[in-house]
Amino acid sequence: MPFRNRNYRLLWIANLMASFAGQVSMIAFPLVAVRNLHAAEWEMGVLVAVEVLPFVLFSLPAGTLVDRLPTHKVVTAALASLTAVTVIVPLSFALGVLHMGGLYVAGFLMGSVMCVEGVASQVLTTELVSRQGLVKANAWLMGTESGLKLVAPAAAGVLIETVGAPGTLWVEVVLLAIAVAVLSRMQHTAVRQRPAASATWPLIREGLQVVRRSPVLRAAAAVTMIWQLLWHGVYALLVLYATRDLALSALQLGLATACGAAGVLAGTLLAGRVDRAFGLGRGMLIGLATAGAGWGLMALAPPAHAFVAFALAYVVMDFGLTLGFVCYISLRQAVTADELLGRVTATMRWLSLLLAPLGSAMFGGIAQHAGMTTAFAIASMGCIVLMVLAAFGALARRDRSAPHVWAVTGNAPSPSRGENAATIAER
Image 1 (cartoon, one colour):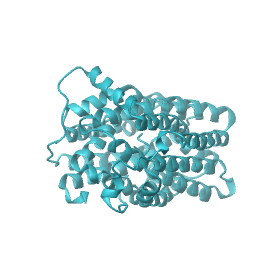
Image 2 (cartoon, one colour; image 1 turned 60 degrees about the vertical axis):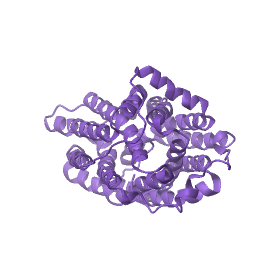
Image 3 (cartoon, helix red, strand yellow; image 1 turned 180 degrees about the vertical axis):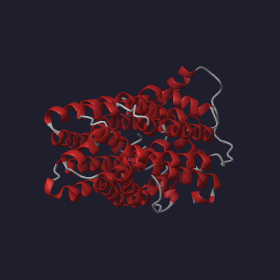
Image 4 (tube, helix red, strand yellow; image 1 turned 90 degrees about the vertical axis):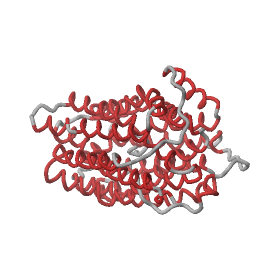
């Protein structure tokens, strides 16, 4: 049971605060662009593109950094930096100097910090729990998203309607500061083998070679690369589509997002059963295809019942995201040696997000010229076709002679945490 470990409990609490902050930011930050700066479709595409660009530029060096330095100190420093960067947006708005260019800079800096933090936090989890407990620990971290989604998006909606989107970002600053304070109490000595001091590029090359030699990692990288292109195209347009095309208020948007908690809960509870029945690779494909179906439901949302349709789509999408990424992250960690975790995590993240900036900008252009509905429909159909094709590859081949993760961890864990995804989706 991971919660018997004090350091894991501290990580979980800090992750809870940071995830709450992320839920607030996912609504408030783009609404600053939509409501206060009146951004167009292509500008929203560019905004998400600059947020994800640091993952393409810095993920590989971030992996070597994590493998060389004390992991929990890297996570703490990264969250402290994210706190400082987040202050830029509401402060600039209060001073009357905020514009889209400034928002692009803030987004790029946030992405840069999150690039390092995301790699380090995943590696830190593997240091705090046994390899047999990885799936349970990851599912608890992902499952807390279900609880947060019941309150955080709705709370963000209320705050935005009350004090505006820029003012709501001050709440994110406070939550991140709490996360930093909690992590600073962690007393952890890593047990992982650290690489010998050497140049950065040989370490990066080693991470790339590990992925290249593994059929499972290669297949996972290819699938997530295209999936992330589609997802970031959808993500760039979500808030603009909901508030402008569907005429949802910030509160309705928050409530619809909160409904996704049911999907996160279901994805967490079913992850173990799906793994035992189909394997982690197939579970990943099933989950990501389901998320794509959720995008299609968004495209079909009738204006007369926009809130209900959008909320239902969020349930389907978040179920797929949670199931897909619990399986994906657990599979990646299970096939990677401890001393290579930082480099392989960073390499896989880099490969998966390589086309994401292109996806954001491309779908922003599609929506600008062909409409939001067309953009969402293209993403949905592309996702489902991708998963069907991937079902004939290495991810669908289950090696029954290999150790089976869920077999040694027991039943699927109870829910409790949450990339942005996104995370969720390793944003």
